[in-house]
Length: 211
Image (cartoon, rainbow, N blue to C red; front, side, top):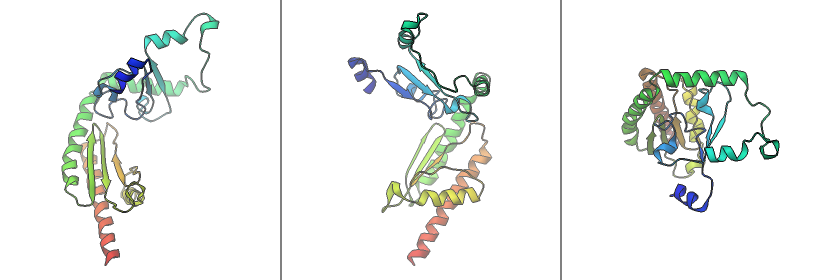
């Protein structure tokens, strides 16, 4: 609906695929699942596999022709200080070659299948309010009826996970699992199991404090 409104009113539609691009949501780009073609497409993290900072902005032919011209009076003179960093470009090319040569989307589908199976287990927990899976993204909301998204639960889970060899990035009471595509089933199950134990530990602490 938003894409249609933009077209009707001549507004450029930008798809920010910095986080969601390169298969993270199960398709190459999330906008494909939303069934629209943006005027501008922003890419970054997945472009180099996260090893080096690299970004790219893709534009439609119409937009491109509007700022690219051989005549200086018609050119759009804009750039950045670190454009075309050689190391970042090499990393990006290597990452794109992997996409061409290896079954990356099949691996993402396998990760999603594992996430969906784990989601069934976590959905049954009374201390979990919501579980959702999209591509390689797994997220749960840990119950905190008082503080909600401002809860400190995430920090406590982060500390527990890190002490047990797993690096996650909780935000508020939301815990995300966003594994690299090269992860194997054994490591995925280790993450699920460690997160499960962290929730058990937190719940037991709450019961002890209440007692």
